[in-house]
Image (cartoon, rainbow, N blue to C red; front, side, top):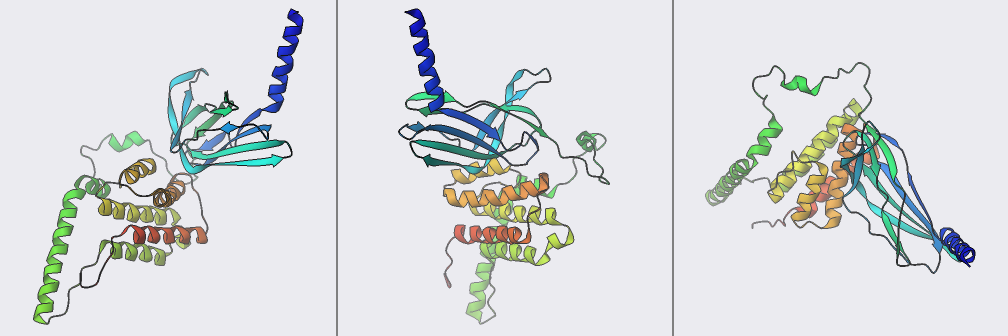
Length: 318
C-alpha cells in the first residue's frame, strides 16, 4: 500500500514537471558598467492553464557575492532601462509565455539576481537565480587613468565647478532670470508706447530649441566628439526641465530624474522619452556606445518634441 502511494506521488509530480517548465536566461553574464543586458523568463504550459506575473517598473534588487563565494546581506539595484515585455506563443494544446527585462548596473562586482515568482493555476513557482559579473571599462591605450583619490590629495580647496554652482544656486538664478524677463517686458511696453522698436524677450522654450539646433549644426560626431555631443544634449534637457518644473536635475542620476519628473505629474510616455534621451547619453559616456547618425538626429528630434510638448502655450500680444 505504501509503495503504491509513493508511485502515485512520483507519477503526478512528473506530470506537473512536464506541464510547466520554467526557464531563466541572461544575454550576457559578464558586462561593463552601464552596458544593457536582457533578462528572459520562459514558461511552457497547457493552453488551459492560467498565469499571473507581477513585473517590476524601475529596478530589480540583486544580491552581492563576496570573495569567499557567500551571499552578502547587501546588494545593488539593476536599473530597468526599458519597460517589461511579455508575449504568448500558442501551439495546439500548449502555449509558451516569455517575459523580458532590459537592465543595466552602475556598480562593479559579482551579483545574483533572484528568480522572480510566477503564479500558475493558483500555485506559486520561482525561476532559477541568475549570476552576473559587472566590471569597470577596460583601459584604453594612450589614455592616462588616475586614482580618484588623487583629486583630493594635495588640493586645499575644492576647485570651482560650474555644474555644482548651478546646482547649489539655481533658485536665485531663476529669480534673476524672472527679474530680467520682467524688465524686458516693461521696456517692450514702454518702447511700443513711445514708437521705439519693440524689445522682445526670448522664452525658455525658444532658448532651448535654439540651443538644440545649434548643437546639431556643430556635428560634433564628425569630429570624433560624440561623447561631448551627448553630454551637451543631456545638459540642455536637464537645464530646461530644471527651469520648467523648478527642480534640480543637473546632478541627479537618470533614475533619480525619472522619479522627480513622475512626482511632478508628467505622463508616463513623456517621462519615458526623456529617460531614453538621458539613458542614451549615459551609455555613450560610460559604455562607449556609438549610435549612428540617424539615431543621433532621432534623439535631437525627441528632445525638441519634449520641449514643445511640455512648454506652456504662448499667445501673441498676451
